[in-house]
Image (cartoon, rainbow, N blue to C red; front, side, top):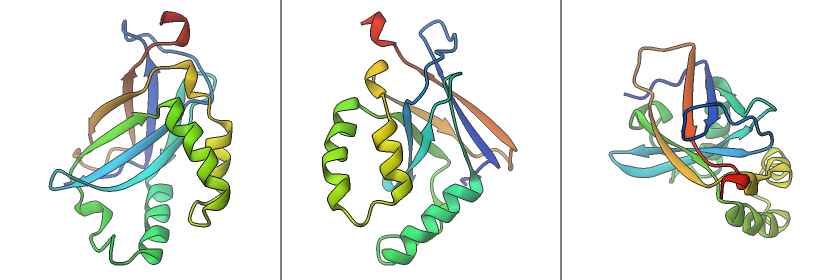
Length: 153
């Protein structure tokens, strides 16, 4: 069973598991139900230490907003999702594509528009990291995302 932590921190690290201190990298989270994609959201941008943060309260509030807009798509509770979630460093090309769509799409929140506009994911490689959120209500989960900086490529 999925248990959202009070705070979710996503730390970017390199192949040696050392922190990659790069800001403004946009991190997303994907939830599945019975192994199938169910809902996605943005964790946020990394700070100068390469850490993106969100809270269970914020994730739940954004899910509830989407559920209100699309009740047929989101019939299940977020807590009914699989405990394994994907944490995603979005590909910079995908972000560029979304920036072209965002201005004309009324369904994208103003907050998401700002995050896409500020993102500099070209600094790191895209990656998907699976994390297990099944522990009994942790107050903090730190997830390490192996990635490479643009200078390593």
